[in-house]
Amino acid sequence: MILASNVESAGTGCRIDEGDALALYRDCSIHELGRRAHAVTLNKHPEPYRTYVVDRNINYANYCTAKCIFCNFKADPPGMQSGRKDLPDGYVLSFEEIGSKIEELLAIGGTQVLMQGGLVPAELLPFDWYLDLMRFIKREYPGVHVHALSPPEIFAFEKVFNMPARDVLLRLQEAGLDSIPGGGGEILVDRVRDRIGIGKTRTDEYVYICREAHKIGMKTSITMMFGHIETIPDRLEHLRLIRELQDETGGFTAFICWTFQPGDTPLGRLKKFPPDYDGEPDGEHLVLADANEYLKTLAIARIYLDNIPHIQSSWVTQGPKIGQLSLFHGANDMGSVMMEENVVSAAGTTYSLNEAEIRALITDAGWQPRKRNFHYELLD
Image 1 (cartoon, rainbow, N blue to C red):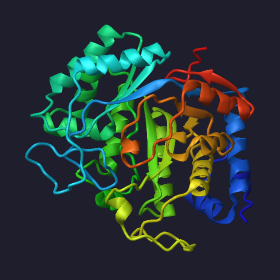
Image 2 (image 1 turned 45 degrees about the horizontal axis):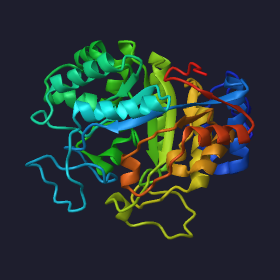
Image 3 (image 1 turned 90 degrees about the horizontal axis):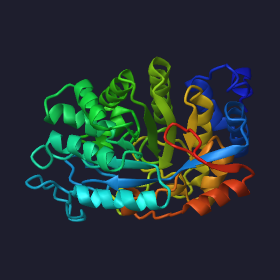
């Protein structure tokens, strides 16, 4: 059992390294990890409440040139058929359809839209379409926070529109983009990305977009999807990269991790280790993460990411009870009511909670539930 003082005092000014984090993972029980992560959380967030946000995922289009083998949501663009027969038909939402969704959000007290699409070819959606979309939302719904366009989307804009990422971001910001979600992070290790996310950003490209956004004062969240072909050191390398960037820019507001949902995806059909397997992942076979693995990884992230202020629960993939337990394993936020979710549900996971249910989960865990905005400012 690791008992190093720097690990025991994590959260009080003494930083752990990847070796410490690996020892925590290998040597500590989930209960011990939860205790340590919870102590860090209480040190950062001693307040008597835990937070949540009311927002809506709006996937404006599902055409995508990437070949991510963990995704059942994308559609092949015209003339770029991948050969997969299990993909849905493609669509692009009209501004009127997007507006209708925002009005439904406002009707339940929502404050934010999270908008992402695929990597859409320029001939289907020119850059002016995105600028016009931002202007439309800000003109018709000026109080709505627009949290949109993941780093892979922004990087694709740089390439297909032949425009530096900084200029892309500045023009989108001027049109109404408020912040960028951390979608597309998966695992920031190229060996993994090159196998599961062909045609999407490599590690340095993803980090580059986050850095450029932070340099113009635009905040972003950051994510990690684990429990597939990555190893435990791969997860820690992911955490190292984002901690280093946060040291440099301070631009991440929150970290969100979740487990890969296999469904009937090509990645989910890879060869798996047998059910009684208890060794180390090898980066080749699929090793699906259960609730125990989710909570362990969440706890280590809270201890390791000492410079990221907030960590969200992923009840969307774990369900309400594990989502609630997250509040004792490093999370200080229950995430989003999320009145619409399309990507995870396309892989077969369909948990849903309304605002009253999220508030009840927080209350039953012993905290006051408080509604927040993107910047974690309390609204109630």
